[in-house]
Length: 234
Length: 242
Image (cartoon, rainbow over all chains, first blue to last red; front, top):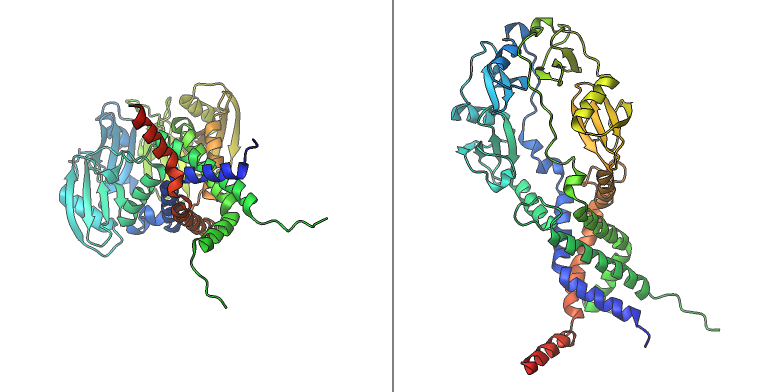
């Protein structure tokens, strides 16, 4: 008996669609969200005031090689500011540490008040700070980043939140509602419901190749099922 | 005029016509998505965590800050080690200058230095070293002049090294290049391959959502009780056997 290809393909398309149908709808929904909301907004560029690069007076600085010598194994010394104070940030085997750039003295980690002040200066929105907390466990939204960090939350419908390094007072993350929705959409898109980062998981591989097979058969059906011009009768 | 009745037939027609227009893109999304899921993330590399090679600073023998040129307003200083010599990165609004931290002399990031930096990142013979004034598609996440260092290995690895700071920027291999081609198909930005927020993909996305939505709706119209008979028959047969 000859195989009736259209029937077979239509059936397989249908059954594959039953298998991956919900996921196909989720892919397009989440994909649409990710393309519609601009990635710069997702990244929270609008949350931060542009920092103007103010020049430093080099004659008032302690030598960076001097502060480097007080941290065994130091690999990099960088000039930056903590609020208005010039500081040397020294990267060593135990992470970064700050030194007063004018005196060379070791600085204690930034205080809660300093972190709040830094956050308020950096934040471009109108809302005031709701809470400043030192977290020792990473919330989901800080992903693979290693705690601890300061979490500064501002008032507003989108729960704008800035994260700071406890060692240096530098901003290490910014989050808001649209980012959180994006992250959830991304999780649904790549079907990694735990880490939200493994794009090679077997479930995704099986689902994408099934979807591909479904699309190929759909394409074939499309060609088949569009009415052709009526054949001229001889 | 007869009013249009919202019957399954109407939806079937819309699904089919939108499908004709978007079918190819739908297929491309499916195949590029599947390929990106299949290509090993670790081999693709170059994502998220930046590879670093840091060297401990030597203990003494520095030229002090006074040796730095005074013709620009300095907006940043970094002291680091290239692996054989400490250097100052001098940042100003005009860019970055690299200064030898032992002599105070300007360091040109020449071909030899680019080779040395790249060789620290990858253990393979170097084939060619090419200067570039701007980023290419492979190094598009970075700005400024750079060196491209091509290795003779199975992956055809290329390392990119900044010509301003001598910092290693990124490593690209054939797996990444394959991945990037499919990423281009996926985000429909055929020129720059970076943006996924352009009008073309937004329109295509709306169409695809419509197609997936109507297709999903049609699932409920396409399956009949009879389609599941084989399941019930088997269950009955199983019951009889036991």
